Amino acid sequence: MIKFTIITLFREAIEPYLKSSMMEKAVRKGLAEFDFVDLREFGLGPHKSVDDTPYGGGDGMLLRCEPVFAAIESVKAIDPDTKVILPTPVGETWNQGKAREFARDAHYIILCPHYEGYDERILSIVDYKISLGKYVLTGGELPALIIIDSVVRLIPGVLGGEKSAEIESFSDGDNLEYPQYTKPYDFRGMKVPDVLLSGNHGEIAKWRAVHSGKVE
Ligand code: ADE
Image (cartoon, rainbow, N blue to C red; front, top):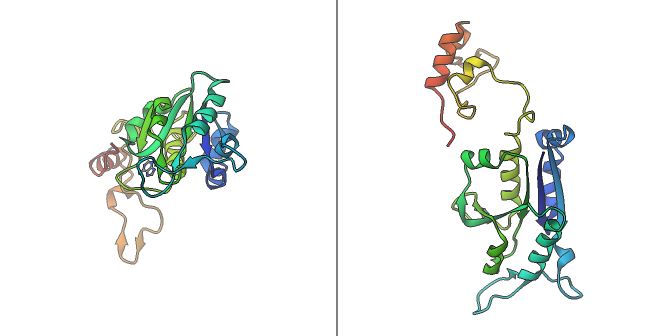
């Protein structure tokens, strides 16, 4: 069982995806669990404030330490082994190898920052800083979904439909990105490569291996 607890101000931006398709199926099969913590509940003062202006000046607001630490500590009080993931453009770049490392029995917290950023001292409670790539998003919600999706699909039993041994002999399970075709055979003059209609499984497997792109 893999569990993700998502700390966010925008649960409504994340939840529909996790209740759809393969993620919903993973939950229904008891292979994954998703939980939410509303950061606002840990906000300060009558307005439940979670952010403030940066020391030294500058635009925008930063997530404050107190609500973030309190939210994370509330999860760790129940499950001390929980690891904390922070999506941030200055983290290590996410890739398929990392998704594979994360796909195991574990409980992860994903802390979704918003606004212009976060107080640097928040990093002291973070185990993994993850970047989706060299661009800036408005918050951690989309990265959280991408991390969760790419990890959960690797949990045995989530995808179903086992791949044929032939295909597997040419792959490590991820580099299956060879071109694929379905009916019709001829669409506006674009024809399916004849080898795929040959019925020769050895030749088909070879063709696919040659035409495979590799997922990092
Ligand atoms: N938050 C904002 N931009 C991000 C990115 N590129 N990757 C991860 N988290 C982010």
